[in-house]
Image (cartoon, rainbow, N blue to C red):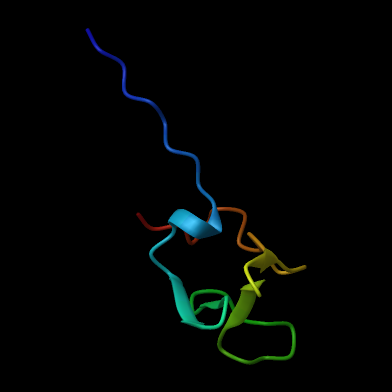
Amino acid sequence: MKRRKKKKACCETCSNLIAIGEGDHICYEVEADDGTPAIMPISDYEPTKDYFKCSGNNYEE
């Protein structure tokens, strides 16, 4: 019997991550601390303090 590899959840492979241009990406599933409807986990292609803020709870393939 073949075993499937378990996919690791991360922001880059989540379908909730939306590229908005110039290396910036938003996640529309997680609310920011100030109440805005989205966070920016990746800015200028670098992880921010909000990277993987949902801890995989909102992860979608």
